Length: 84
Image 1 (cartoon, one colour):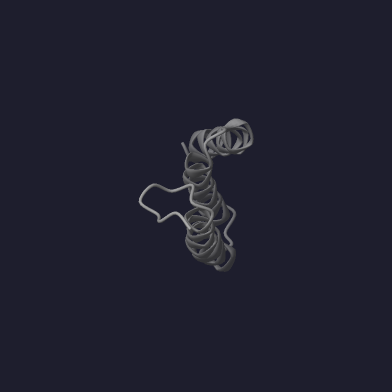
Image 2 (cartoon, helix red, strand yellow):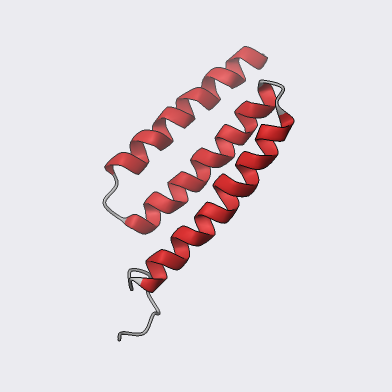
Protein backbone atom coordinates (compact mmCIF):
# COMPACT_ATOMS: atom_id res chain seq x y z
CA UNK A 1 0.00 0.00 0.00
CA UNK A 2 2.85 2.36 0.84
CA UNK A 3 4.42 1.84 -2.59
CA UNK A 4 1.17 2.76 -4.34
CA UNK A 5 0.95 5.99 -2.33
CA UNK A 6 4.56 6.82 -3.18
CA UNK A 7 3.92 6.26 -6.90
CA UNK A 8 0.83 8.48 -6.75
CA UNK A 9 2.82 11.20 -4.96
CA UNK A 10 5.56 10.96 -7.56
CA UNK A 11 2.99 11.30 -10.36
CA UNK A 12 1.52 14.39 -8.69
CA UNK A 13 5.03 15.79 -8.23
CA UNK A 14 5.78 15.42 -11.94
CA UNK A 15 2.36 16.90 -12.80
CA UNK A 16 3.05 19.92 -10.58
CA UNK A 17 6.49 20.43 -12.12
CA UNK A 18 5.01 20.35 -15.62
CA UNK A 19 2.09 22.54 -14.56
CA UNK A 20 4.39 25.25 -13.23
CA UNK A 21 6.43 25.10 -16.41
CA UNK A 22 3.53 25.39 -18.83
CA UNK A 23 1.04 27.68 -17.12
CA UNK A 24 0.91 31.28 -18.29
CA UNK A 25 -0.87 32.65 -15.22
CA UNK A 26 1.75 33.54 -12.61
CA UNK A 27 -0.73 33.39 -9.72
CA UNK A 28 -1.70 29.82 -10.66
CA UNK A 29 1.99 28.95 -11.05
CA UNK A 30 2.69 30.03 -7.46
CA UNK A 31 -0.24 27.97 -6.18
CA UNK A 32 0.97 24.91 -8.11
CA UNK A 33 4.46 25.50 -6.70
CA UNK A 34 2.99 25.46 -3.19
CA UNK A 35 1.45 22.10 -4.00
CA UNK A 36 4.78 20.86 -5.34
CA UNK A 37 6.55 21.84 -2.12
CA UNK A 38 3.84 20.23 0.02
CA UNK A 39 4.05 16.97 -1.92
CA UNK A 40 7.83 17.04 -1.69
CA UNK A 41 7.58 17.44 2.10
CA UNK A 42 5.41 14.30 2.27
CA UNK A 43 7.88 12.43 0.07
CA UNK A 44 10.70 13.43 2.46
CA UNK A 45 8.65 11.91 5.28
CA UNK A 46 8.34 8.65 3.33
CA UNK A 47 12.11 8.71 2.87
CA UNK A 48 12.45 9.01 6.67
CA UNK A 49 13.94 12.49 6.63
CA UNK A 50 11.68 14.51 8.92
CA UNK A 51 14.17 17.38 9.22
CA UNK A 52 14.13 17.89 5.44
CA UNK A 53 10.33 17.54 5.40
CA UNK A 54 9.93 20.31 7.96
CA UNK A 55 12.39 22.52 6.09
CA UNK A 56 10.65 21.90 2.75
CA UNK A 57 7.24 22.67 4.25
CA UNK A 58 8.43 25.83 6.00
CA UNK A 59 10.64 27.26 3.28
CA UNK A 60 9.16 25.80 0.09
CA UNK A 61 5.45 26.03 0.81
CA UNK A 62 5.67 28.85 3.33
CA UNK A 63 8.33 31.49 2.94
CA UNK A 64 8.91 31.14 -0.82
CA UNK A 65 5.19 31.34 -1.55
CA UNK A 66 4.76 34.46 0.57
CA UNK A 67 7.70 36.09 -1.21
CA UNK A 68 6.26 35.14 -4.62
CA UNK A 69 2.84 36.57 -3.71
CA UNK A 70 4.45 39.80 -2.47
CA UNK A 71 6.43 40.04 -5.70
CA UNK A 72 3.29 39.53 -7.80
CA UNK A 73 1.53 42.23 -5.78
CA UNK A 74 4.51 44.56 -6.19
CA UNK A 75 4.48 44.21 -9.98
CA UNK A 76 0.67 44.67 -10.02
CA UNK A 77 -0.26 41.23 -11.29
CA UNK A 78 -2.58 40.47 -8.37
CA UNK A 79 -5.96 42.21 -8.46
CA UNK A 80 -6.69 44.91 -5.93
CA UNK A 81 -3.36 46.65 -6.13
CA UNK A 82 -2.94 50.35 -6.76
CA UNK A 83 -1.50 51.65 -9.97
CA UNK A 84 1.51 53.89 -9.58
